[in-house]
Length: 480
Ligand code: PNW
Image (cartoon, rainbow, N blue to C red):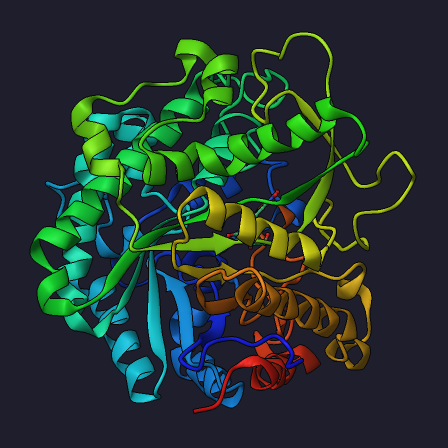
């Protein structure tokens, strides 16, 4: 029997995001995003850090492209900083040509190097002016119009050079971490010990709703006015961990697993593929979860040309007794790293939430493929941090066998999902091309296949995993 494989035109490469790598927050007319302002609040970011220096990629595009070439990447997923392109964000605010042309040149340089750009329009760095002006996502009507305008500016500027567009990265994170836990910008939460503002019983659901409609509006704009001439595809990227029952013999834990997947993924996935929010969410949240008007659902349903999948890990899930708390956002469950039998879901990493489990990746692809009628998948992120990596001497740090093992496991699981389960997966961009600003964890947690020396002029050093990824894909991708 031949082993699992991936299709011969499979595209692989690496991913990053603007605020995490660029630095240069005030160069060429860029204005603050909500992450710039959030980082200034004491106590929000480990080490009091911000994206102010990051990897200095704004000034090092040639170096980054050289790394991609060296690693044999076919595609590079990166995001645009909205507040570089339209500093104040809104549809009546001026476009900053310098900021826009920076990215146009970058795309030209990537194409000249033989690398396909995959462009994320929004990876969390909302122009701060829009948050201040009308509350960002919380004002659906204003936000949708401003986002569509921004998307149109980008579609127009890049034209047929970009064949893969991603509207939003991980709306779950923007909504829940931004408006419920307050761990991410803009940091709203009902927990008065963490923030003085917010109502996490309603705001995350309003934020998610606005994002879905803005996504739908941008997709409609692309399909109406650009797709035919530019020939690209457009979709959204959703994150979500796989779930295994804490007690496989307890039906309540098995149901809790489904519910957790629905709250994390189907919140957006069902709206896009099935035209409604999951029943489990409606049941728990009642009218705190917005409802779609006929016009809105017409925008949202069927709005994905492909499913962008970010996936890192799995959890064991235990049901909870009694009523769900009004601020609960995960379906009244408890997520754990070991099950009833005491088995662990996967090894520890530097990220408290990340315990790798490659088989869970395969199972989730199958679950999504079954639920959504076999969409085309691009895996837009997958990767790992490594416990204690930041404290290792350089030489040991570069020998990141743990990360290589992660990619062998996850890419192999994806090939099984394709070959054995019939999942239509056509691309994979590893998180991340290089160590970068890991949000609330600052620079202490590293996800890169390239080491970045933050204390030594941001010099880049390839880790072992950088070349290993291509070697793994060579084993799986079918030859002519
Ligand atoms: C993703 N969680 O975020 C993001 O898209 C990246 O920007 C980020 O650097 C990467 O994963 C690694 O963290 C997540 O707490 C952040 O479950 C947090 C969670 C999941 C994804």
